[in-house]
Amino acid sequence: MRAVRHRFFVQDAGAPGATVVLSADESAHATRVLRLRPGAAIGVFDGRGREFAGVVAAVNDQVAVRIDAEVAAVPEPTVAITLAHAVLKGDKMDAVVRDAVMLGAAAIRPIVARRSETSVAALERGHRIERWRRVAVASAKQCGRSVVPDVLDILDFAPSAAWFDAAGLPAPRLVLAEPEAERLRPMPPARIEPPGGGRATLVVGPEGGWAPEEIQALESSCAAVTLGPRTLRADAAAVVAMAALFAVWGVE
Image (tube, rainbow, N blue to C red; front, top):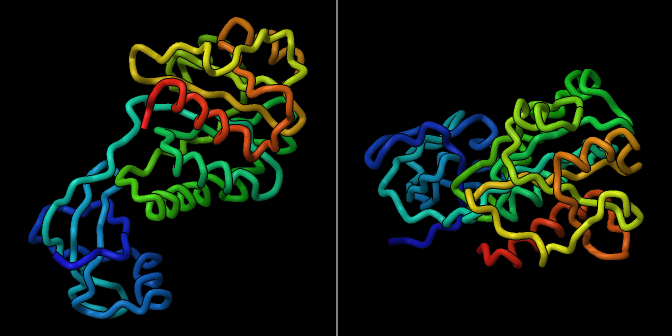
């Protein structure tokens, strides 16, 4: 089989023998950026864990692809981490979503905390959730995953056991604590036991840190994790924490 150089996201990839049409964005990337022509060998993934080898069948306004065979997909992490991350300023959340997908997050829940410098309404007006979902697809394409994690709807943060359950954030729940947050009694990742059910939630706050009332609620809802005495950039903290937890838990 010819080596596959480029991968494309097709939600309805179907089965071997089918011909599918790439979306407008994917077609533009294939023709204007990669300049692919009929006969080019490509990869196709459906975002739900299936991966296929394919061949460009036709290039017109959109690109038609013949699905040749299903191939082995890159395995997903054995612990499915949902990242609940406070929305950051500017385009920093793009990097958070990109890196979380690359590292293996199962889902991402953007949240608006007390000290977030935005609101759910403003983010919805700016179509940020649609942008982050496109970033998730692009990151999955780049890193070789066949699963595109869900970027869930943005919620106001109201930390309590009931809120976590309603938001679909699985237990155990770990909150990343700033170095000065002694009240949360944080533990290093090495002391956090791997989740027995294969799922967990990591909660990361905004640039300005958690408000006192949020800390009080988080104390009863989450186990706190510390990454040491240094203060990390807000857009880097989640990926460092996920990498540390996966390393400690032996997750590939």
